[in-house]
Image (cartoon, rainbow, N blue to C red):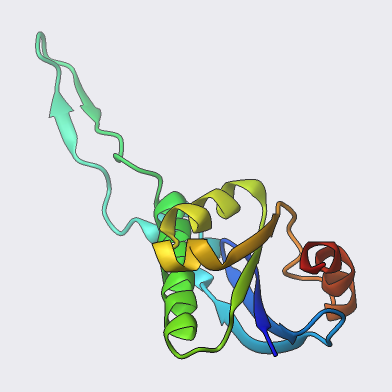
Length: 146
């Protein structure tokens, strides 16, 4: 019987469900968290930005960080989730894959998926359902599994 992994995620939490066959019952197999994504920028940046001199005159000002620390943490978590997906696929835990996440995080996940995971992808839903109950998730995802 074919099984599907449903990844329900956002930048700080991901839940992995498995379901076998059409109309099967969802079972949660993992609940991952990334508390760093919930921290304030100043808690993520241990150092103050560097200072620089103007090219002319006596002016000095702080340099901006190249990337937002919260964005870096969200990207790191997306990478962690896709590694879990790759491991599950190598171990034969699923045949097909569904991603459910808010649009921006869904894009992050999609960009991090390996080629073999992309080939297993049968559907996507751009909603944040990570904090909802299993029945609600089943209701939203069931259309993708038909």
